[in-house]
Length: 177
Image 1 (tube, rainbow, N blue to C red):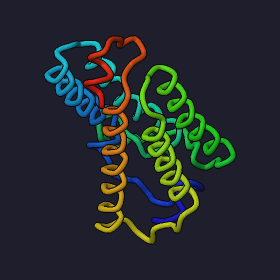
Image 2: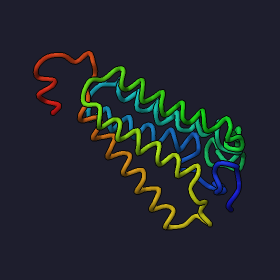
Image 3: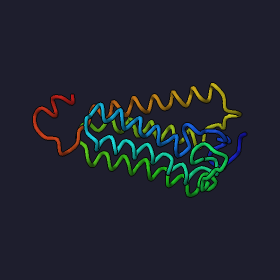
């Protein structure tokens, strides 16, 4: 149903696998297991788990009461999306703050992260100011998946071009290029 909040026009009434606390924890554990297998280090796995869990916490702040703890009938959410004057600066601060944090802690070419930032800001602007969908359906789902795929591929590209400032030595720069 369009117009459910000032910033998100869709009624997100049933999302137990992606937007319940339990569902998010399962996705977080799956991602942590993947990272643990890939890096064989518990610290990146724990950080990955916490990043996935942060999605639910941030959604709790922005969503109207449409989130659940385990997919049940009781729904919670603080509804920040009903206050664009507060939600827009907060979301911009999260994007720009994360970008600045990443740039200060990594070395490498500047252009790839700037392209990623530009695409993310463009996607955010389309989400905020673009035409509202009439209804949810395959076209909306596929366009959302395409947007997530583009952002993921760009982020992987940026990750492959930059390295942590603590990594030093000739092998670091030759391996990263």
